[in-house]
Amino acid sequence: MKIMTENYPPYSYQVDDHAEGFVVDIVRLLMGQVGEHSSEIVFYPWPRAYQKLRDGSSDVLFPMARTPEREKFFKFVGPVFSNEVHFYRKKGSSINIDSFEDAKKVGKISVTRDDLYHQFLKEKGFTNLDVSSCQRSDFRKLLKGYVDLVPMGDRIIREFLKEVPDIDESMFEKVGPCVMRSEGYIAFAAHIPDGVVLKWQKALDGIKKGGAYQLIIDSYFEPCKEK
Image (cartoon, rainbow, N blue to C red):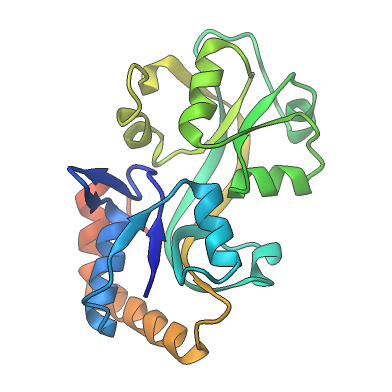
């Protein structure tokens, strides 16, 4: 199978051309259980990976949030994690929001093209979205003052920013109410047989029940527990 991910620490990232991250670890464990021993995990920018999965030129993409729109194009196994999402502003910024409506009135919110945050906010009627090619660009634009806010999952922002040169978590601060609670899945192209998808789901259910899943989560996030 052609299996894709993006550079998105701590979910998935590369160290010396080797794929690492807590979702990578989960997917590798599942690959072994379903017999995908020879498959490799290939990295692509999110927009390209998303299009390749949608047009059927690849087979699997992770992690991906499950939405009604995406249900039309993909099949899902999961969830493999859950996370609360907030808006972040540059530290010391005067931008304050108390609601979704407040966020719609700020100058610009940077989002990555076709990712969950982009699709979710667009569906909610946001017209002040500034679209980037990746989330690293989102935070660089925020730091430089080109945009006012960036959405990001609370559990992963610290590890994500560790991988971005010259940027760290202390440069930003959470603002406003929770935007959404997201769950990440392994997405399969429409051409993948339902029986294959079911096999992966049963394998995931098995490692959750047996404890191997929780060991992986705990090795990355302590003391917070995945449900």
